[in-house]
Length: 293
Image (cartoon, rainbow, N blue to C red; front, side):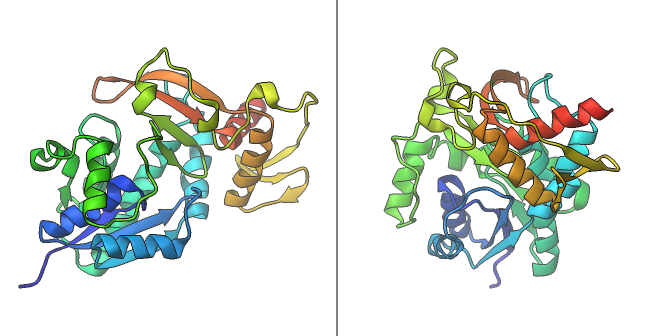
């Protein structure tokens, strides 16, 4: 009997590595799709090996950095897109692109379903699923963290780590890192764990893209950003591709302690959520674009 094919949005991390195995146990032929959105990732060969060890029939890796910045980040700069006047929507912008690529792979591979690792409490479930259905109204969506048989048995990271250990799934997550993160070329976000306590300040070692403003250079640095039809194309006279330009500004902004925010925001589903974000390059572009409007 032929197995039904399913395309999973795969990060190579703890949650989605467990999902690969669990979905395979449910009878699906799992195609794990890992998109390079500019996040710092382990060796790509290691991701391939991990996905296969977890039970994926195929592990596909695609670099979409340029498409992400050109078609998603730059338009958001045009729109002055700020959620609740503060958040530059780095995670929100990436989800429709991931959904698009999943639907494309499903079409090529003859898959009947797509899956994501979002819970029933957050915004990602909405971002993924509305995008899926907009692109293919007939696609089947499998969301394990909204399936009682899964989330009641594996409600948190401790249970997921135990699952990974039991089935020999190699993961780098540990009980000593009390937060979750999501990264792409636009930003990195942190939430959950210790950050659920609004009185708990983020630990200094949590930040990855920027140094503390207290430790940033005392001397300011002036740069000139050139825009063409609303899109940034050069910094100080040097032309860059979209992804390389944002990478450069991330490095520069991070060095000067630009782009950190710590906020409690309203989720689409009505809950409150604390998020800590680093968006150095995006913050520079937002301010620069506003200045020329």
